[in-house]
Amino acid sequence: MKKKTYDLNFKKMVVAEGKEIGNMTAVARQHGLNPKMVLRWAREFNRKDMDQQGKKQQKLVTTIVADDADDAELTLGIFTD
Image (cartoon, rainbow, N blue to C red; front, side, top):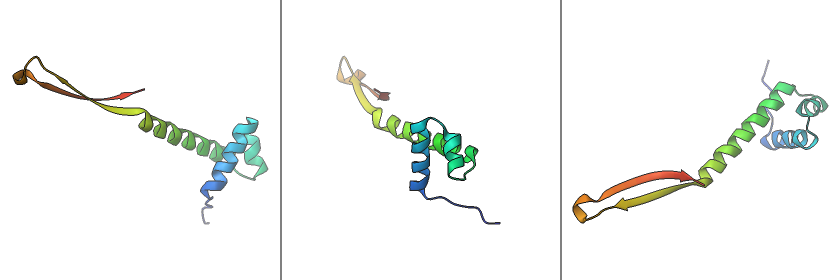
């Protein structure tokens, strides 16, 4: 038995429809899909969105603290907004 694969645009459409009406299970059944699979798609899209937002919000900050040239200290850090 071959595993059914779905186009990314179809997955996004189904998840968007489920979010719009607030019932992923009902939308899954309307499309003849397993509700657990549609819920997994929604979690995966949400996780990817969160990861992308996190990457956009991170900033590399460089700080040099020194009283004189011999005591210069370089500090690197990643901060989020």
